Length: 198
Image (cartoon, rainbow, N blue to C red; front, top):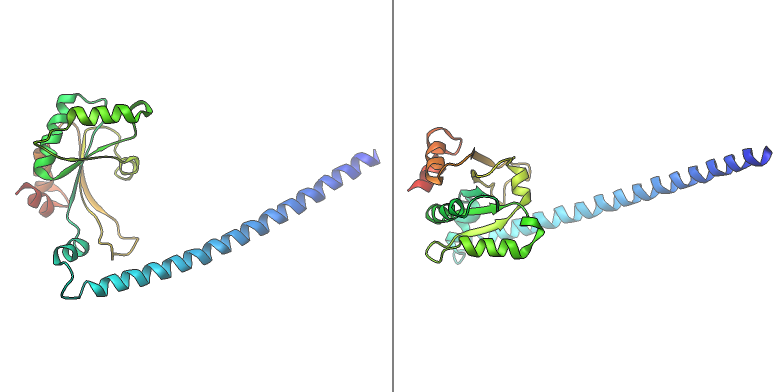
């Protein structure tokens, strides 16, 4: 009986020692993380300030300067490998016309070969267009169904990290042109949508 009580007490003491060790280790790791984060933020700030000052040089590429300070609107067409090839080809042609990017979520059946075959089957040398896999973009814009068309104006690289990206979104089988006309008529990015339509 005494041995059982002693064993329980020993287990309790070991548990307390372990919890104290874990707590101290976690605190040490957290302080290390804060220290590293502080250095990273300081260095990032220095690099950005140096870059910003070099943009003022007369030899700096003015087109690059404009694209950095005022990022152009980004038109993304969210699609899926489950859509018909005809629909995907139609979006490829329109995306070329309006400088859009086709965005897929993940690999069909986890296969690089299948996504490669799909991209090859819908690509057209006459209408080159960017295509990408971006699961995070699906989550970021709350894309639950495809096709979906999103027009966004990314924040400048000199904006505060907390600056929110503005965007307009429409879901359903609609042409890119019709989506842009809708954005131009009633979207938050009406001016940008009209620029895309030119």
